[in-house]
Image (cartoon, rainbow, N blue to C red; front, side, top):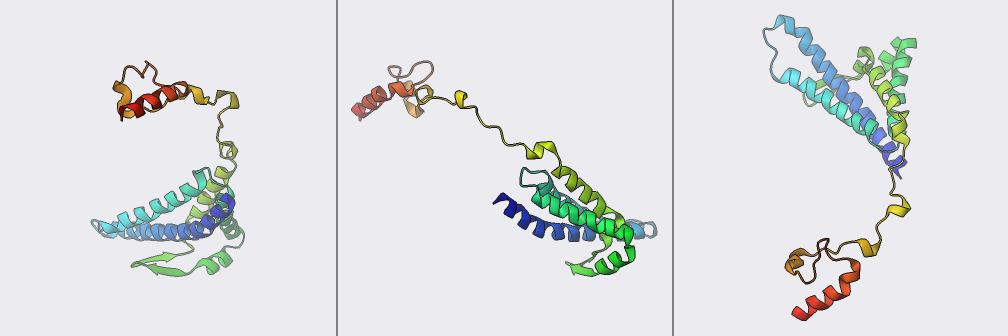
Length: 189
């Protein structure tokens, strides 16, 4: 079940993150290309670029670092790395394939931007390294069978009855004292 969940997450988050990176880097390139000609960029331009890239990083961080199935991180990482490697051997084809501009909320995102800037290779490598991390494959520690508390050693919660010095010892009631406690409490009602 966890493999299916991370597969669905990869199918949704991989392309969404790609678009966010394209939006953020495209916006950032536009802002800093025009910065020498302007005294001060408008306040929303660098902030929008930062938000897009930060959200993309958070989305990939969820897939890459949490103790989920590594399937999602593997799929996204290999997809991003594959696009970067393909661009090394056939840059014209990859750019032609990805060179589409989306307009989202007044911002333009050229889908080839992550390949052009090298972000696809960087992010893909990070996700693949997260998959091969030894800690990711370890199981959560389980309590050894001999250290589990026995029912007679478990204190009974007392709430307001802690004032009753006749029934409460220094460590509280144990399961052995239950019949006495129940009898005493019922007789007071």
